Image (cartoon, rainbow over all chains, first blue to last red; front, side, top):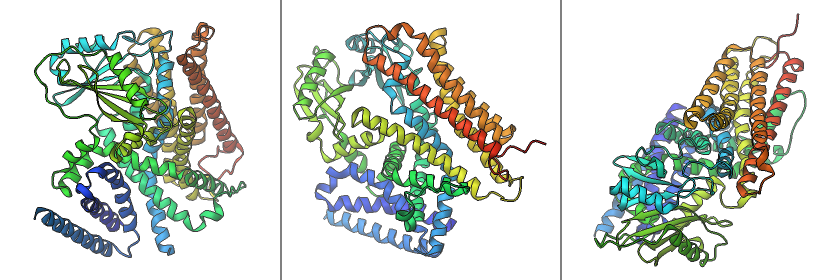
Length: 86
Length: 519
């Protein structure tokens, strides 16, 4: 219970942040026109990850899945930045 | 959904509710009153009892500001009063503190907005429990927990939602009745609660969130894009050439004309923002409220020198960022649909407070020992805490109204009286709930709240007797409306006290709420 709670809270935060950053990158001009809607979406998204974490069978699974999701999302963000820098 | 998952969500719902419920009760009760912020302000300072500096023109407020604090000329704001009986005040940043002052307070500016104003005191209770800085963050975390409680609560009830939604099983099983009331209010006002969970958390935690996201995912570029997203005026450097500014009245008139030209039905200016005052490149942003649109807050930027319109961000001219920012506030404060929506928010706000109160009652009820007069220690503590904190909040806020009335007539410092009465009564109620037998504490504190509310309203009604027959102004309606609402709420509290007494005497004896049978 506590492990899933921590997984959702601690890993859900950066995951929500990176997903929104990726979403904005995908929009024209780096999503400058959608910054406020993205910020408003942040808390609902984080809360969704926190709630979703409890649906995992165990704390270990929650940490592994959300951890890998973070790794993939951060890698994608890094790739996007490299592509934009070229 | 598997039953194990539902049980997990049940635990999440219970714990988030327990942790956040008390603070949410305060937020919703004080928030319901905050919907009528301007009316409460008019109650304190009706047309016949103007606030200090109410008649100082805005231009002389600005003259006082520039004379006393010349360094502010590059960036300051003027908060316009809600009506003629209130004073405009200046706002500026002083190194690391926000400063607020009306014309006569320039030598000793305050670090809180509207010090001594009852409406602003109730607002501070709503957004931060009245505690500076820390309170706002606490309420932000509470909002996040509230979101979790909301989603988990919905998931628990989802399987039997359609079947049970309109069921009210009134009968001997009190748990069922409370459960049905809790679910019905929770589900029917769900969209409203989603709005508050989402807007409340971002409004409270905004600076922290922005700083965190900036580092984590935005490569340090978020502050720049955010500033650009909410900018409503072009950034201009000072020219160094002095110029005579148009008067605030002229600027407001031009801004209103430009705003109405975009097609909004109304535009009531509430804030002016000056940059480079007294310079030929001075920019003045006039912010105003429009009704019947989600882009409630609009801004027109003008040149301070000749009144040219530099930018219009109103109604249909708002960008996606602008309309999102504007509707964030509009949806949270219910300022988009006139009186009807305000009353709706008031009712839903009180219903929200009831939701958290009934949540605690359910927790107690579900742990009740059905064959014992003595109840578990945990439920007795919960019952005392619920009565002390929830009824104590209502009593404390009524105390702040009473203190405002007393301060006005006895010439005391309003801010200190309000804090003393509100926190004093709240703490006294908590202490009282700890030592009195539980059912007696509930009945007596509810009665005290009812009596105080009605007494304040009646005193004010009679105190202003002469005014009700004089020429009628919008402020008069507001003041009278607050008194009448106070009496109505007082009657509701009296009914609650009566119901609690009945339950204590005649209800099931195996409960924390029952009075011991007379020997």
